[in-house]
Length: 251
Image (cartoon, rainbow, N blue to C red):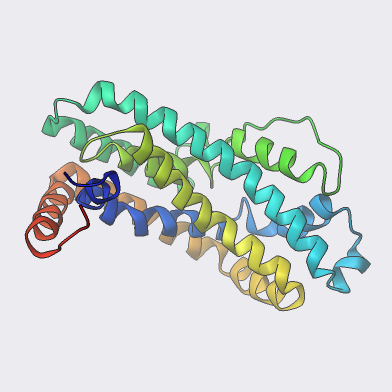
C-alpha cells in the first residue's frame, strides 16, 4: 500500500497548485497593501527605532519578523485546514460544475486584486494592537492573518478555492496555506537579514506597484479561466497519470 506521502504526491492537483500558491504569497508581499508597510512592521515587531534599524541589528530583527511570520502562518494554515475539511462536503461527487464555479470565483478574486469591485476593497482588521517588541510580534502576526485586505484576502482565497479542485481534504487545504505563507513570509525574513539592501529592493517594487498589482490579478484571472474551461482539470488528470505510470514512489 502506498504511504500517505506517496498518495499526496500522486494527486496532480497538488503538484500544479504548489507553484501557484507560492507565487500568490510572493505577489501578496509585493502588493501595495503590504510592501510599503514592511519598515513599520520591522520596527514594531522588534521594538527598534529607525536609527537601530539602520544599524542592522539582524538577530533581533530576524527573531521579531520570524515570530510575526509564524503568527500569520498559524492562522492561514488553520483556516486552510478548516476550509479543506469543509470542502469535502461539496466536492465529494467530483461534479465538473464545481470546478467551473470555483474558476469563476477565482476570476472574481483576480478582479478584486486588480482594484475592481469597490465594496471588497475595504480593509477589515482587528484594531487592538499588541505590545511592540518581540513579545507582541506573534500576536501582530495573528491579527494580520485574521484581517481582510484587498491585496491579501483575494490571493489567499484563490489559493483555498484552488485547493478544492481535484478533491478536497483538510491536509490539502492546510498544506497549500503553508506554501502560501512561505511565499508571503520568506521575503520578510530576507529583508530582516539584509535591511539596507532590502530597502533598496523594496523601493524598486514600490515604484512598479501598479504593474505588480495588475500582473498578480491577471494571473488569478487566467487561473480562473483555466479552471472554468476545464483545462486545469485536464492538466491535473494528465499529471496524475504520468506520476502513476512513470514515477516509482516508496511504498
